[in-house]
Amino acid sequence: MTTIDVGVVFYHRLANRDSKQGDGKHTAVEFRTRFLSSRDNPQIWKSSSEPTILDFKNVKKIGPSFANEAFGYFTKYATPATFFERVRFVNISKVQKMIIEEELESGYSGK
Image 1: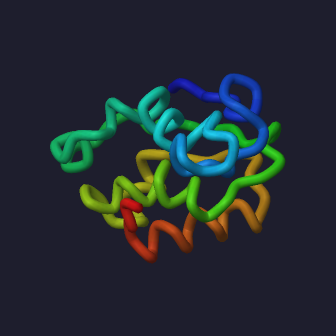
Image 2: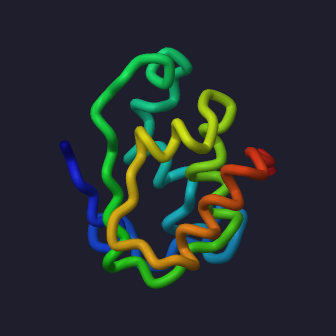
């Protein structure tokens, strides 16, 4: 099982959906491509697989648009419950988890 220390290997502030938002750096699209690209396949969600573990101990902020693009994107393949089985979060604050849960429940907006 691989654990990714998101704040160290990516960035501590997760706010930009894509290159058009904010300063255009450290975007959700880049995050999804870099760390979750193997999950961008409907068949992966139908079979059991090792979970991806995202460690948020060094993440200071996550914005809704980032959460929607990085995680809500996968609701086209999986329910929120299945998503949380396959992508696990550790050392995450209640507020950060609530933001991610809301974006998964709302579904992918794809803006």
